[in-house]
Image 1 (tube, rainbow, N blue to C red):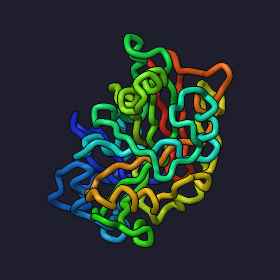
Image 2 (image 1 turned 30 degrees about the vertical axis):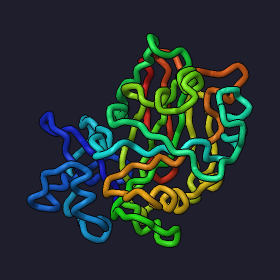
Image 3 (image 1 turned 90 degrees about the vertical axis):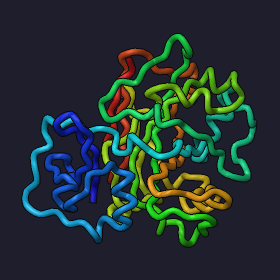
Length: 289
């Protein structure tokens, strides 16, 4: 099952959508009385593939604006850095990594505020007054359903409500100069998300192809099987002393092929189109402004 947040009559509306994004069913039609956002749905329906059923042909999605599926998380987004083997190597060699190690003992976790989130086809600001070295990062992203404290790896997937795509836009010069990652990651519009959230029954998160094109040039082409810390490990580490909550967003890291992996680096500039694809989830397109 696939969920999107769409704009109807000027208001965000949670809907079930089909695989090719041609039809939609407002959740309020399927679940009478529901009038919340995506986090409210996650809290109310822990197993949507079993609990919700569509009927009829739905409504045409053509001409309807698709928003970020989860634009109002209740907390900052959790982001994992240097979590693909080949990307860890390219980052280490790039001169932008202060740790000087390919693999850390635990996942490297930072956060982005909700103010970074934009949806499919929304503009991403270059922020040229603040940075000259903007980069892209295609990331398989976990949406937590049932929260918890001290979640064991063996139980981790039971706590996953779905998956989406996040583009972890990064100001590399700020990331490098600040010697920590938040400042370079937290600029407005630096977290495109979408187009949908896909429930776990639809995909195998441990074997998904991830691709990124910049202005039509294929830059990233990897498989989630290259993750250093897999999703159960990330959930176990995060929840060890911090209660995860329904609607929490966890981006699992990016693959090799980002801008700093090239010589010279290929940074984003106004007008550049970023096209991110993750197998089984869809395509997220945004343009730099």
